[in-house]
Image (cartoon, rainbow, N blue to C red; front, side, top):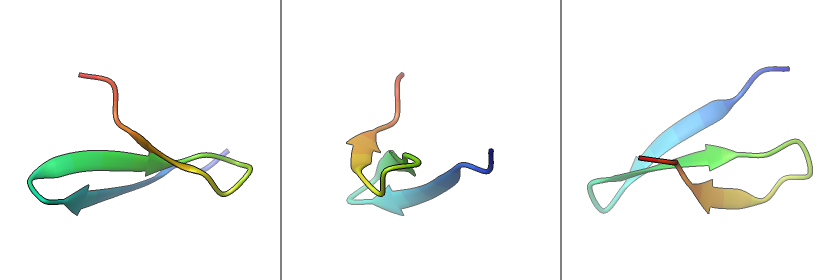
Length: 26
C-alpha cells in the first residue's frame, strides 16, 4: 500500500486508503 505524504503549512499529512488526509504522526 503506497502512502502519499504532503507538506501543508509546515506540517506533514498522509493520505489514507479511503482518501482521507490526516496529520502525520510525530
